[in-house]
Image (tube, rainbow, N blue to C red; front, side):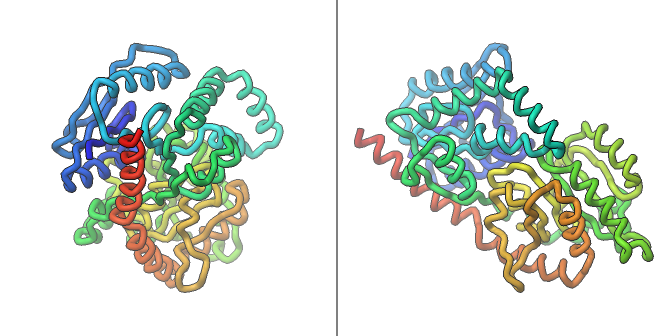
Length: 399
C-alpha cells in the first residue's frame, strides 16, 4: 500500500509518538509498503531509509493557531498526490485514519486539573481555563477532527481513551478501534545490560547495593513528580526504615529544567536521595541502571515509558489514569507492580515504594514484566493496525 503519515514534527530523539512513527515506518518499508511523511520538521538521519518526505511549511503564528495552519496545509499537500490510506497522529483532520496517541484534548484538560492537590487551586485553574484561547481553539479543532462526515477510522491505544471518546463526543464503539501500543523490543538488547547498568550507575554516583527507582518524563507536573517527592520523604519517615541506612535513591530523567523540583527536594531533605540528570539521549541506559519504574501520572493515554520499562524487565508503579495500567496484572505470580488510585495519596505511593525495597518481590515483579512485554510485541500491534489500515483503504477505494 501507499501510506501517508501526517505529523507536524518527526524527531525520534524526543520519544513518544515520534519514536513510534519511526518504528512503524521501518516495519512498513520492510514489508515493501510505500511510506510518505508530511511534516514541518524531521530528522532524516534518525528515520529509516526509503521514506518520502514532503515539507509542509507553516508561517509563524500563535500557538493556538498553528495546528489549524498545519492541518490545512497538510490537506492541501496530500491532495496533490494519491495515497491508499492517510493517517493523522495529532491535531489534524481529513485523514482516513486518526490515531491520537496523546489522547483527547478534552480528557487531558480535565485530568490536568487534578495535578493541583489543593481543591481551591483546582477550581481556580478550571475558571482560568474558561478564558484560555488555546483551550477553546483545541476544543473546536477536536470537534472538527472527530465529528466530521464521513467519519474517520479512530485508533486508540487503551480502553480508557476509548471511554473518553464515548463520553465526550458520543462516538459509537464501532468507530473506535483499540490497538494496544507497543515498542520495538530490538531497541533494548540484553547482551550489554550489565555493562550499561554499571557504567550509568557509576557515572551518576549510585552504589552497587542501592535500590534505584526511575522517574522519566518531560512534563514533571503532569506526570506526578511533586507527589512522588512527598511520598519519598514519607518513605524515609517510616519507623522500619529509620533504624537502617537508607538504600533507596530516586533517579529523575527527562526535562533539564527542574529548578523548582530540586528546590522542593531540598526543602523535603532529599538532597542525597534524588538525582536529577536531565535529558538522557540513550534511555535504555537509564532503564538498565534502575531497579523499578515509578510513574505516578495524572494522565497518560498509554505511556510508552511503561512499555519500555516492561521490555527492560523493570517492575512498575503507576496510576489508574495511565492507559498502560490496563496491561498490568494483580494476581500473585503474574503481578508486575502496583497501580495507585490517586497520585496525591502520598501514603499509598510511599507504601508501594517500600514494597520495591524487597529484593525477592522485585525479582518476581521483574520476571512478570519480561513475560508481559513479550505478549505485547510490536508484531502483534502491527498486525492489528494493518487490519484497520486495510479496511480504511478498501472503504476509500469503494467510495
